Picture 1 (cartoon, one colour):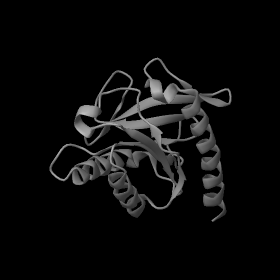
Picture 2 (cartoon, rainbow, N blue to C red; picture 1 turned 180 degrees about the vertical axis):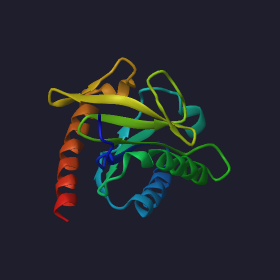
Picture 3 (cartoon, helix red, strand yellow; picture 1 turned 90 degrees about the vertical axis):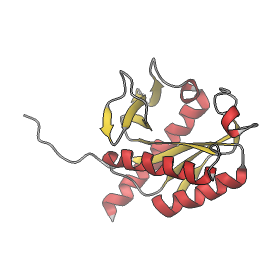
Length: 178
């Protein structure tokens, strides 16, 4: 018989896609107010993988990944996704979105994104939010799955996430030492 115990804390990260840098900066301030200090921010890179967001947000689009020093409980993911959805609406100021936020977490086994869209590989978490198993960690690296978004399967993104996993190890070590 297995004995239930709380899940280990996880590393909160998110992807931000935006056209307006000012809105992104506002967004980043609000995220840090809610989740604590960022311990990683990627360089701004053009987001050209799809034109899906251009009609709504304009062009050119940019992307940054952020992660936060304070670790989360995995079961907090629905609440986090609802917060980022509300933040997107607030920054839109009664118009179309100006920032797209995709929160998720990583741990030693996998990377999970939060979504409001169900699918066969997305278990329901509650509050209208599903867990998207995006990557698994195997043989020393994150690996894509058949349904992984193509941008998360890119070598540069996987390399960045592998580095964030090392930061996560340090975060856990500090948590235990505290």
